[in-house]
Length: 119
Length: 116
Image 1 (cartoon, rainbow over the protein chains, first blue to last red):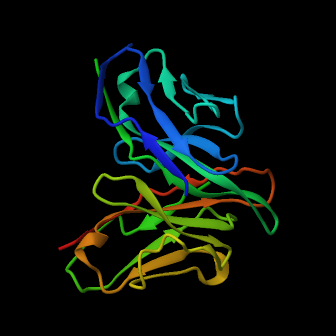
Image 2 (cartoon, rainbow over the protein chains, first blue to last red):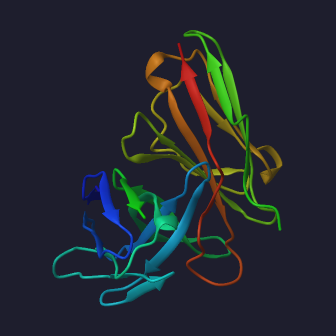
Image 3 (cartoon, chains in turn brown, blue):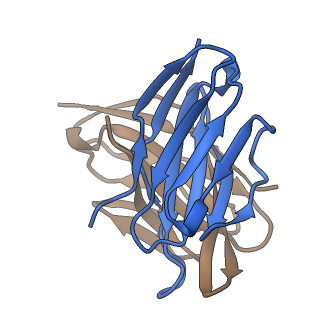
C-alpha cells in the first residue's frame, strides 16, 4: 500500500533561516503529492502540490519538487518567518476516475513536522 | 463562501457512550472524506463519500463506527460504543468533482474527541 515517511520534528529555527523538511513516499503508479499546513487553532490547508514527476509546487515562498527517481518531495523555504510556525504534513493521493470527472482519492499522510520559528 | 464546518469542536465522553460528529461540506462538493489523527501520529483516512454513496470505506477501524451522508449534503460519523483508543482529532474534507480535474480537498477544523 501507499505510505509517506516524513522528517521527524520538532524543528526549531531562527527567523530568516533556511528550511528543509524531508519527505519520501512509497506508492504504486503515479500519485499526486502534496504539502498541507496546519496553523495553530485552524484546519489543514493545502500549501502546494505536484501532480507528475519533475513538477515543482510553490506557494508563499515554499517549494517542493516531485522526484520520482528518489521518491521524494522535500519541502524547502529560503527564509522562514515567525508566521510560518505550524505543523506541516506531506501527503500523496491516487487519482480516481469517478462519475462526472476525475478526483483525487484518499490522502495518505506523513506523521507531521512541528516547525517553530523564533524572532 | 463558507468553508467546511464540523461540530462539535470538542467532545469529552466516557468509555461506552455514543458520540456523533457532524460535517457540513462546502456547498456543491460531491466528495466528502473523513480522516482521523490519533495521539500525534499520522492522519489516517477513514472513508470517502461521493454524494450519498460510500466510494471507499477501507479505513473504517471496526463496526463501532458508522458514517452516513443522507441526501448527499452533510455527513455524520457515529461512534458506538466509544473506546479509549478512539480519542483523537477527526477531520472532514470535501472537494468538487465537476469542473476541473484534480480538485483540492478542503479541510474542516476538526473535532477533538476525548474518551475517558
